[in-house]
Image (tube, rainbow, N blue to C red; front, side):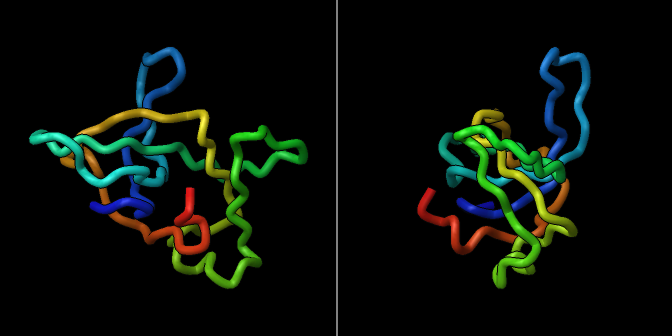
Length: 101
């Protein structure tokens, strides 16, 4: 996987009680011999009032189709975790316009 790819991964709940397969964006290329990457959570909820760390991925954007997402979504940059690439379920697409993050 490479930086800015959108992937499906088991993302932990806040209380670490379980995980749910969710889309996430890779913020780094693999950075250790165990191929760890930093990812940020993506949710399909687009709130009317977003946080300063939220980036809206709008379906009406001409590059949205490249993300592989089905609906407008929010990239939650305050929801980060580090994973090994071996737990990635599959690749959905990638971010283009937001590659300057």
